[in-house]
Image (cartoon, rainbow, N blue to C red; front, side):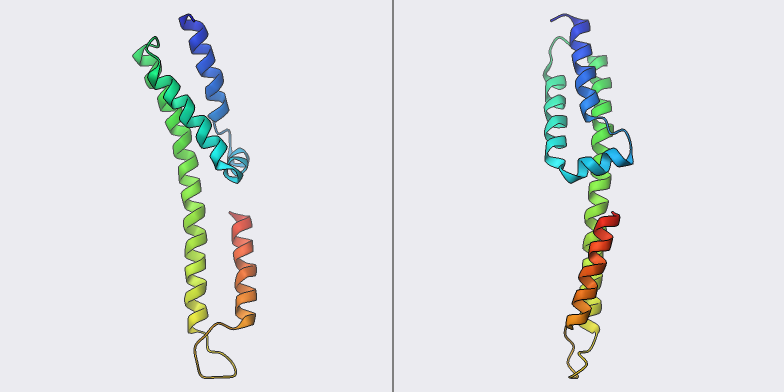
Length: 125
């Protein structure tokens, strides 16, 4: 395979891992394994290609890494938002007293409301 056809092949494969915007990122986050597999395969292919000049390798790998960083930042923030909301709810639920006793425990109404709020947070993120 000559240089131009290799470069065109990698540019076309790079289009598969580029994140075009927020809506595209939401779709990717629904099934992240497929995206990560494609990006990892492309990164390995580019880095192990002995015929591709170093400048082209660097440019392509930089583009791949930028998209993986976008993916990683959003994926991590979704997880931490969800985890912090859950821990905050558990803390509040632990402090709320049960109406029939003087003990501190979770109430059924609190848990229903809490799960409802978690669902809203999950859908918003």
